[in-house]
Amino acid sequence: MTPPAQNYGADPSGLIYGFAFDADGSGRPIGTSEALQWLRQTPPQAGGFVWLHFNLSHTACAKWIKEQLQLSDLFHESLTDGSRSTRVELDDDTLVAVVNDVHYDFAFEPSDIATLWLSVGPQLVVTARLQPLRSIDRLRDAVRRGEKLMSSVALLVHLMHDQGDVLIQIVRNTTARVDDIEDKLLAGRLETKRANLGALRRLLVRLQRLLAPEPAALFRLLRKPPGWISEDDLGDLRQSTEEFNVALSDMAALQERIKLLQEEIAGRVAEANNRSLFVLTIVTVLALPINIITGLLGMNVGGIPLAEHPHGFWWVVAIVVTFTVIAGYIAIRRHRD
Image (cartoon, rainbow, N blue to C red; front, side):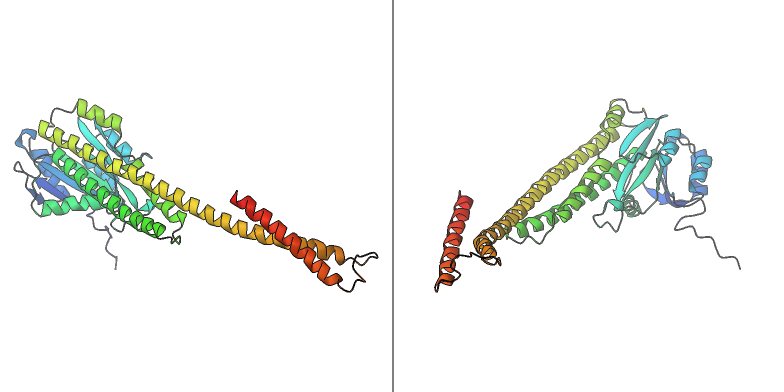
């Protein structure tokens, strides 16, 4: 028997799910064949749009998208482009967006960040990803609950709002971790390693680099948007970018706070090392006179003083104690100075 083909949660074209939105903004589930039929038969002025979400790990997905859907060349290039920074660009009267998001099992690791590619037109929205992401599935759940999306740009704005919420949640969780580390530091417990703070800081830097929208491309889009984008959608898109900037500024402030904690921990560790080194120095200085004198008296040569004196041992002990006290006084006085 031939085993059935594994589509990894998608149909043979790589489609995970699709929705058709009418003029009222209500969405209903559709497949690829119905979506293609809707796109061929529905005139642009009729209103509504289709949203198709694909799994790029499916072997036939990229080929099917290129053959069956008329998308811009920039979208296909972005699928293989090495640059993963968040951006929204206009190409051939179509919005091409690259959005970064985190996995469901996000564990504060840089490898838990993945990319979502979007092509947004007046009648068709195509999203594609390699791993399951939080924001896109939150958008799917909202559509299934009956939330209305009046236009394709409204779907993009909703997705960016969801991604902003995920980013804010990450900042909150990271802030809670940093608060706990700071409380332990103020309590005098230094079991927290600087490497833990360094890992959080590197994660925040990577998130900020990947999630911050490219200002140049976004400025060009907001300054000269395509004619099919309404003023309301344009205002919502501008507001979503402002929310991103607020979240990113909070992330930058958190990075600075982590940096200060790292410096504080480094200062306390250096102070503890200095105290240990001082104790070691004092012990070495106090042991120096007795080592020198016993070394001299232990030589098997003639003429050793006090060798025949009946109280020679106690004279030597007195000399050793005297020089030890003098050496200890000098060392402690210099340390206080």
